[in-house]
Image (cartoon, rainbow, N blue to C red; front, side, top):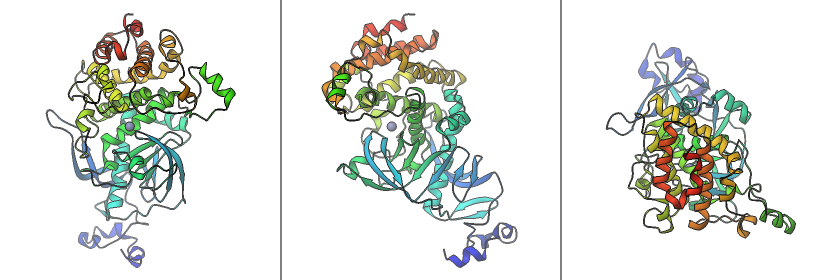
Length: 438
Ligand SMILES: [Zn+2]
């Protein structure tokens, strides 16, 4: 697109009435605002219906919370381009690092056809589609959690920021392949922002526009809001005196983030959020071609906690614990019809129970079940392989605390049955089940 065209045809919204075909040549990218609420052509995800799985198409959609299309700013989030991301660490799709870069405006290029913004390049299509996907997620926050998005916005102190395809710099000698997660989208709890990585060849549907993946990433933001009470504690290297103190403090600051099994529960909750918000049982299916997709499905081949020590039942990563948790939640939710009011009510109880789990962890029976600080952990070292003797205790303690926050009703009974079945005594020990009996 040539610059002089932009200026010359800046009043083209009126022109489309006269000559529609002319608009295909017209570039209204900066000054010609379409009517409010904004409508755009986007990649749109429709949830599964009956026996069909979810589908994508390019269609015209209203973007009700969009405030300014040229900067992709909405009421609850804004999409920013041209940033630099320095990554210090990644745990699954949770990234920590530093974002920098100028406050340049997005250079979105679109024409306006019958009042609809039609992207003129792939980047604009991706940004509008991501905006739409985040909007679909935001519409579902309150039904799925009971949390009002305005309150959430206040809690985090403003809009969520979404960094679209930032330049990646890796510190600590990690390779870019290691830090680019398969899902290509990430949540950064340090700054309450999301990162949409560069498109990759494994994507059938661009993940930045994939509502299922966006909903999964948003699940991490919700886990932070409920379980972590919006705090983002990280482990800092101790001196000798602090090391001694930590050995006697089971809940020292930053420990929770080091626990292999807790990373799993975070992932599992996020997969469940993706299901509740989209009705699809696999956050990745249809979106990417990669290994381990089938294993993530909530309806996939069954496996159990005690099997995680081997690598045949599941991949051995913390995602496996996550899948067990997501499957247990899904199983308990399935007492109600798919995407019914009953399922949403169940989902809200899950969110609330996560919110009380942290304080119940510090009470019996969880307090005794929660393992002592290991020497490695006191030094902020993360273990990245499953260890039955340790992770079984963490899992039992967490599940005991989680179930304790659940109201005594039929949903709780269904949840307990599903947890007992999938986690067994190895991941949900008999001593951890007292809350299931009341
Ligand atoms: Zn994740």
